Image 1: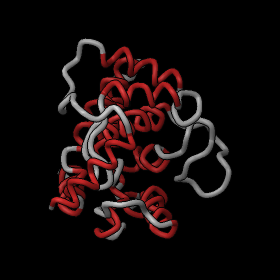
Image 2: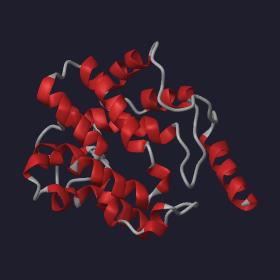
Image 3: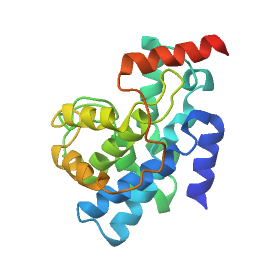
Length: 208
């Protein structure tokens, strides 16, 4: 009930993420099972996936819904949503096991990205590396304020292109296996080019 209430609060604030958390949870569970997670660890992964964007409750709505490129200052505001996760969830004992996973899923496999102050002293958990792939895939294949959805083929190509840098190669390979023969929880159509998808979003805004 706590998890559902938090997800609802986030989706009310940002209409473009409606359904996003649920789809990320589906992809994360596919990956967790493929990579051998079971029982309580798999259950915690689902909760982490559902709450992975909870920090966006602290981001102003006009920034979340901005149709164009973010300014450097706005980018900092959005990136801060990862570092505030312990402040939001840390006081809830039942959610304590998932806090670090959520806070770290924007830290890249090669150590770049954002989400932790200072140098990385310990390896990223498998759960955070799973969330990174699941979140990126759904973000690419669904509409955003600044870009229309991209095709599944394009998204898979981007995961492969950034494998070993942004994403764990083993998790990317596992996701490739997961996608074979499964019915995706969203439309499979989309643009084959990021530039075209962004121009399409601008065109839709002009016609509104």
